[in-house]
Length: 279
Image 1 (spheres, helix red, strand yellow):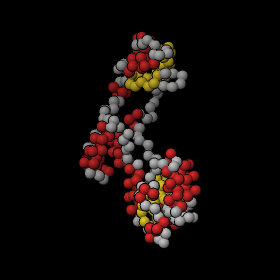
Image 2 (cartoon, one colour):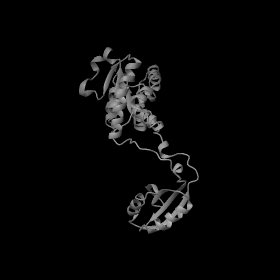
Image 3 (tube, rainbow, N blue to C red):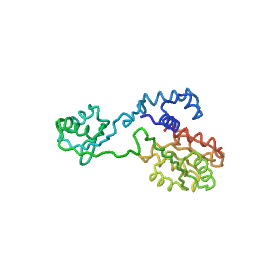
Image 4 (cartoon, rainbow, N blue to C red):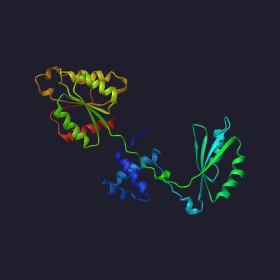
């Protein structure tokens, strides 16, 4: 399944505000290349995430009677009733429900006299309906086309390091990038926090209480099925320390990336974003 990112969201929001906007208009507003917008739109359409259509304002066409039908169908007749309703031009949408009623349908008509005829001359003729309840819509506060994508939950980052200054720097850098940061100071605490929060990425130190605590912690994390695939970014000074000979490499080190301390804020952000995107 295609996962949309922040740029996709901004493009969708822009089009919801102005469906006639050109790719050039969107690109200029969002500060990206027109080709980028074009490719993103092609992908969003191909994936079935968005489609383009005209939104009709029924009341402007004299269809001021907006009615909700709640329908109880006979056993085994829900799909048949639903499809019969969907085929009627007066019906704007049909939903299959849980609960007391089986189907909800929205009907648009000119007046109550037209509604009365619709109920008696059309609805009563659909086989399989056992009960119908009607409600008039007096005012609409939000139409479906006015719905916008909710903000994506920020990535959750677990920082495992016993240096509070380093943890705070990482927290501030990633907070500026709209990421949530939780910290742990020991390997044991790291495993407990990871199980509880199921992070999107772990930033791991090596030397904490023990020289190779971080290495042991990464191996423990990889043994927990629900978090085994979480990317691990190891940031450590051990390769340049007196303990360098003890530090494992290759397949003995179950991580996704290794950086040496000190690391610049930009490099940190770049690596975090790369690993999050790869996941």
